[in-house]
Image (cartoon, rainbow, N blue to C red; front, side, top):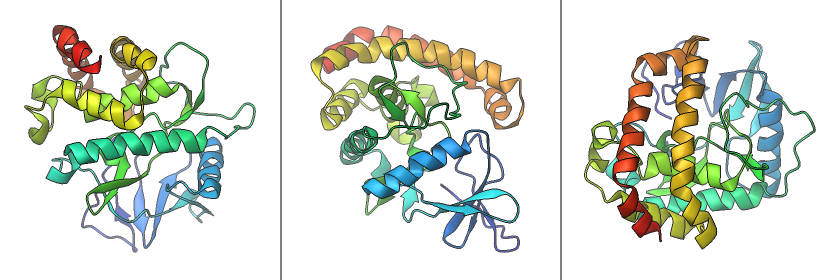
Amino acid sequence: MSWGAVVVDGEVPLSGGDVTEGVVRVGDTVRRPLGAHSPAVHGLLRYLERVGFEAPRVLGVDGRGREILSWVPGEAGRRPLAAYVVTEEALQGVGELLRGYHEAVAGYEAPAGAPWDVEASNLDGAPEIIGHCDVTPENVVFRGGRPVALIDFDLARPTTRLYDVVTALRHWGPIADPCDRDELLYQVDVGRRLRVFCDAYGVGPEMRREVLPASRVRFERSYRAMEARARGGGGWARIWQGGAGPRIRRAQDWLEAHWDELDACLS
């Protein structure tokens, strides 16, 4: 998370997130508005605390009805990305971190009927885990140039390992038109980066064959889901008005144009 310089009553607004508004830092805590999905997310975070996976800890609810989470020390990726965020070592670390999260959460049995944020489109197939579903640079905390923790679990929900991997690759490849990439990622070898990430995660041959088809599905469903969410206003509307739709379409076109070379790298 990045944070601004304006402090009001000890609260520092955090500007790293695109969707959730009203997120602030107070000392060594983060205060965020509660949502319908908050109880489900809190259950997940308490489980991660018990098994020792580094993520925000649930500390309660403040007098203004906001959730209180622990501040995870370190630096999350912010735009423009720092050089250490885009190295192959960082990419490997994120792949290992996501695999570590999946291994940690594999034993979690969410309460029946837990109100996850399920409006976002998912891939077909029976859910395998509670995925993070938003492993962007902004949601990975680095210390000493190494990715060490995940933050912002608002989009967590039952899904497949493949979906979480593909969502991460969208941002860490990145699978995007060069005009929409961070400056330091403009000319990277995306195929190589996909392979490095998949190797670090331990993506097997069968799942690896599904990465590009799943990416194709994800882009189309993301477009439809974001368009629908934008009608409700707030952060989603701001993202959509900022050109999210055209960016997704450009990423789709880029993926199709480079399919064969990306497939060869993954194979």
